[in-house]
Image (tube, rainbow, N blue to C red):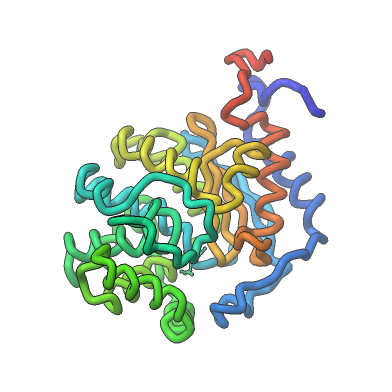
Length: 326
Ligand code: GLN
């Protein structure tokens, strides 16, 4: 096992990070295992060769390698941020009453709800994210999509577009999500028009970013809500802690335990092949590679995070001290 000390702050940090990103990229670039998500036809057309990695530090410095110009839809990567916005605008009490914080041990699209009493298990699975979407809809009405889009644009510092083809594709074939939201309407977890809730949830999933945007969002969380570039506190530390906690326990669905052992960081994936891991106080790490493993996470994204967490000594439960000594 590699037991060299963590990255020293004396070495040119971005040079060293670039070296690690490039070597992980090169090690994995020919690994085309995994499958594209056939249930969203538009995403099933993605180029499986696309592979990009990006790290953003809490001071805003970004290092990236690979096909970094490609855009991809957030999909489930929208979930931590819609949860963040719901906590911020609706308050902890209302959000916690509507959505739990327990890992479900089920896949992201689980429809097992009837034994869940009054609320979905957590906001990282589809059922929970649909309820979070309902809360934002209730708060903002018809301007909810532009409110969320505007938040991303302010944080990222550029326009964020919705991919209409991906939205249409999911609206047409999203029978499982439709079933989940209608079942929740039947169980009283959803009170609004299920089709409106579903459409808004899918609009959030269809927002497009590049890999550097994702790592910047990670750096915002890594910096306890302090914006990596402006330095302004844009999210409270309390909200960031809550979001990172559910990402840690629930973000990787029914592989969250394996991920905790092998990577040890709060994380979230999306079926577009995006993957975000957050090393608190240190960095946001994002990967884009469209082929997915059986849990719906980017196949190469998971491997890249494992390699980088080990090389950069990012596992949260490793007791490195400030000098890099074990
Ligand atoms: N839009 C996708 C869905 O609802 C998001 C799932 C995901 O990225 N895991 O099925």
